[in-house]
Length: 193
Ligand SMILES: [Ca+2]
Image (cartoon, rainbow, N blue to C red):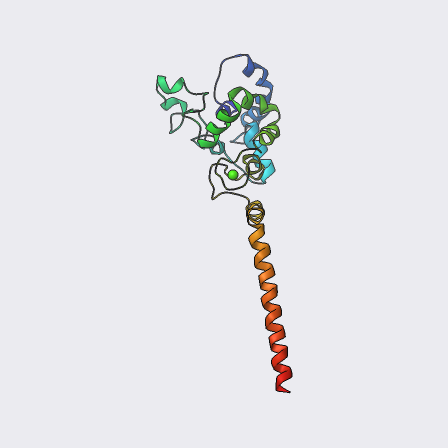
């Protein structure tokens, strides 16, 4: 896997500037120490999450866009290739498309030198509506396009915030009920004497 894999291809000056970022992961692959070298975004998410993610975090194909498989460039027709860097890119999953739609292709690519800034920019969005922002999901490695994939603690906190009045009411009611039962028991105990 190369830099090209998780960012798509474009033959212009920006990629030349970003070439330096290619060198380290590509070198890892060529020296044979790793069969799989990780592009900056994938590597950042994996480091933050504490487990290995793959290109499927943003791309259709877990192996990235290079190749002839589903969601890879070799399988696209000319019309589809015209949309490679647009918000309806055929090589991106719904979160990848959401990133381009929200920030633009250029902003996403410019974040490659500081992947954490991409997560910061996405903290104002929640694509899957699970209550955990896209940026927080990136930091935890959970899928920002899947409401069933989210950090449990953050989901619990969000639900607590949304339902705090119900929780308080339930707690007060429970305490009142327990107190009532206690005094009733005490009264019966006194009456039995
Ligand atoms: Ca979310």
